[in-house]
Image (cartoon, rainbow, N blue to C red; front, side, top):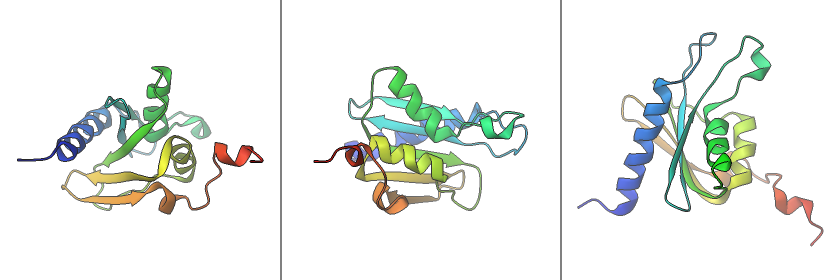
Length: 139
């Protein structure tokens, strides 16, 4: 029998895949879906949304976390990123910073694709010595 963590991962992955289908990427044709599991065991998702003014594009990971924050959740157990690229894609630098803001250093970040491939990182390996709220205190 699968354990709860396996079941939760599969549910989060399914949400990331579903979000992928809604991505708006007419310029890069690089669709991304993301989903995160909150400490309240809720699943939130997001997709990338491009803009003709490229700098205004918002990544799936940041959209995903922002959706949760709008709904009052600010702590996450994990985040899953889904693409249909053969080569697994890590989050960009801006997303790594936002992930470091809301996930614990030991939290898992997964990249998955349509081929069933999966890679797992820890937040602290994606952004070592991240600038976080802890850096704003002199304590």
